[in-house]
Length: 138
Image (tube, rainbow, N blue to C red; front, side, top):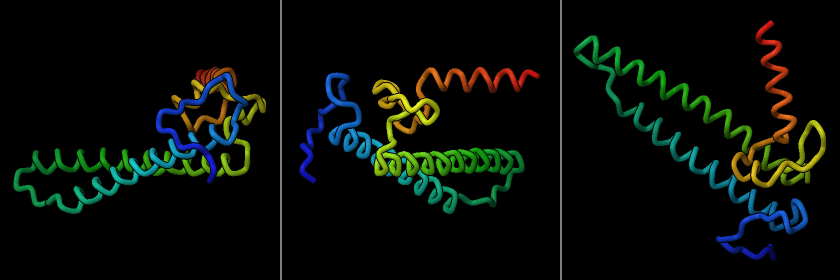
């Protein structure tokens, strides 16, 4: 690929925003995150398949059922998160990654580091959340 692959590289404000090195850094970060989620999902699925629902005690069975429901909800959230990771990877490919989809301004590197699937700048996200709260409270 021709991009220097240093494991201790961190994007910096001192370099051009979303240069090839930064895009590769975030691509690797997203791919690693996706792989971890898929691995955890696989383990969860394995666990659910191995677990016996033949609990003789009704309270044990109820406890097992609620644990299963929680695991399935977690898996559903993970499935949605994988969709967001895939969308972020597509944005890296099309050159729109790292830019606020509302304002077109760069999203801060600190925000992308903390939430690599972010599509809004902090300011736009806060406006969005205030707007949601107002409509929820009506």
